[in-house]
Length: 282
Image (cartoon, rainbow, N blue to C red; front, side):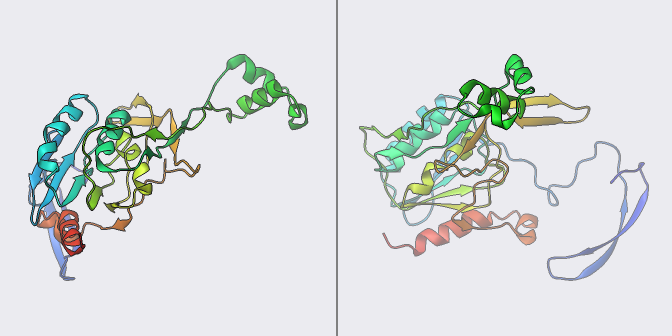
């Protein structure tokens, strides 16, 4: 709330038990932090973390693709991962990096020969061509490649184009092909989302959790007085041409956090994932 220190506010809240309460709030000093019991502190994580859960279920938290060392750390856990009967890969804190690192990890999680990764395109701006396009009409583009591109450029609809090729899975090492859940949140973004696109075609892997951020590609950063604005410089989309930028990647199994879970600091998505895998037959 805006206001000066010691200003008083009377508010009405509804608790998770559906009880209405009146509370008086006193504005604190500038810079005062909320109690951890109200808003949990952001928990910093190593790029990759491994743990054993119940019933032979391995847990792997992959929080970044920003450094090539992430792949080395992943490989160091392979002897343990090969023992797993089922697997949870937690991508909820993955804020991206290098998509190639994600695909290199994904190679170990499937026997598929190809990974059907995302396609990309980027808007082109060619100043002199845009000027020429401003003089053209749609009829001028018929059977004229240059005029067509100039006209599209003027309309801000000229994009780079490259032939699509799936990512070849030529891995020689042992794979980890077991029932697998990939956990996502609205903080899963950029290369973290690119990692999810080919998973949609892999039968033994399902995505569980929340819809992802829906923002990927090279970012332009603009500094504002009190914040930052990030604008995608590259548009990514599914192999079939449908988009997830601005929409997010929807999980196969949606699990939402609840107010009660947030207050009690419970990881409801992980609990549900564990329950789901326990109920699956090998």
